[in-house]
Amino acid sequence: MYINAGRGFGGSHEQDGSVVTDWHAETVARPQRSSTPYGTVTLVTGPERLLAERAIAAVIERARTESPTAEVDHASASLLDAGRLAELTSPSLFSTRRVAVLDDLADLPNDLVAQTSELATIVDGDLALVLVHNGAARNKKLVETVKATKPELVGCPAVKSWELPQFVSGEVRRLGGTVEKESAQLLIDAVGHDLRALAAAVAQLLADSETDTISGSQVRRYFGGRAEVTSFAVADATLSGRTGAAMEQLRWALSTGVAPVLVTSAFASGLRGLGRLTGARGSLREADLAREVGVPPWKLKTMRSQARGWDQGGLARALQAVAVADAQVKGAAGDAEFALEQLVLAVAGYRRH
Image (cartoon, rainbow, N blue to C red):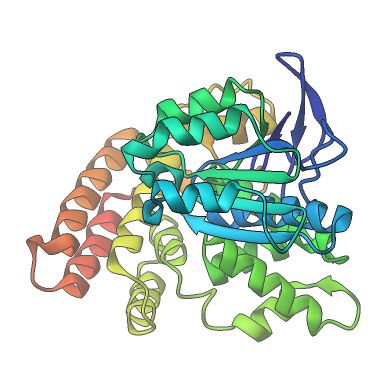
């Protein structure tokens, strides 16, 4: 079975003879290939840590639902030796059943790879074994070996920026609330792209909501000031031709701790998006166009407004300015704030007036 913790946002289909279940924030991973997690291996792969932690928690929940006294051991693979690995996966003296979570599989010592592969091949009937790999290149061969044993798979890929509104909406639904798309995006603009921070913000807003609905006014009330000073707000203001507002937002953003490198990243993302939009075929449907540009459909309205002030030559020169500023804020220049102010002015100057 394969559970995709970051793609699809609901639904299931067949893959290689196994059920492929798409899982996201509003559901808890509950593999259905086996009625019990014991005697099985769950392989969790991918870089998105929040989704991986939820997948691990789901296996532990299933195990304890079946056996409330089950012992749970959680160990980092980088700290294991052969004796500790055997201890974690052997029958417990104090419990008839146990859950063993081997985290950071990419850091597993080379001399334990064969032992771990053997464990995955023959799992004790009273053991629920969870192997967690972050998707890095190291020990990828071990991951493929484990996959060959047909474990329950949970994929936790990084959530792309255009998927974040879906993540927020799913997180709200998971907690029994509702939110409009505009409010979800406003929360992302205010809090940023970190899933853990977004999940915490959703929980906070719903806990203090009397209607189980997250509104734009509520987001502004709780996170007022933050939504206006994100790196994306600075870039959007500049690309829209509001240079004065962009400079004010930049100074406020830097004074509140926004990292300079995030500002250059936001400029690069915005300019590339405009480049894809202006170069896209006019016959595309709205949803297809949004997918090609790499943004949620509602964002196209703002981008079309920005695009009226740009041509391909201006976008290319602006991207060159971003590359220079990016090098400067990473150490090539002594004053990152000045470099970003110059970036705002340079990009604004490449815009058609």
